[in-house]
Length: 151
Image 1: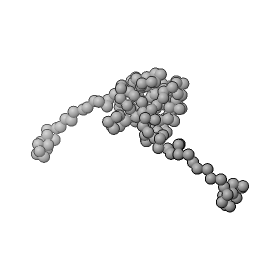
Image 2 (image 1 turned 135 degrees about the horizontal axis):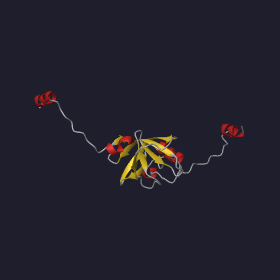
Image 3 (image 1 turned 45 degrees about the vertical axis):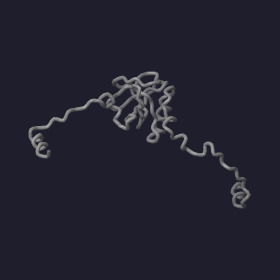
Image 4 (image 1 turned 90 degrees about the vertical axis):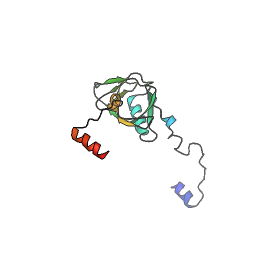
């Protein structure tokens, strides 16, 4: 009540806010969003979730910067998947049918659904090992004829 009366009377002390720490811009830099793997799964999940979408929590996989999006805690048995070495992680991640499973230093799991590469390409994390595969388009005879007519 006293503070409200001081404000109403125009007698409240005025303390200028320091410039340092007065904005969130410094926090939202890509170089500040690298994932530190020596943390429990809950902290990893919160870090990834807290940087989702801008600037995006990132790590290095196979010498390439990869940004993680869409994390959730995974409270189940360790799923089957293909191992993926993540720089700085205490154990390899697993590419599963649902996404990339990474482990905190407490052995608990975080599921990451989407990955973005340095070139901007985003893929479902479950497709990490098939991302480089390309399938050839095969045309039927009718489609070949139509393509020739269009040409």
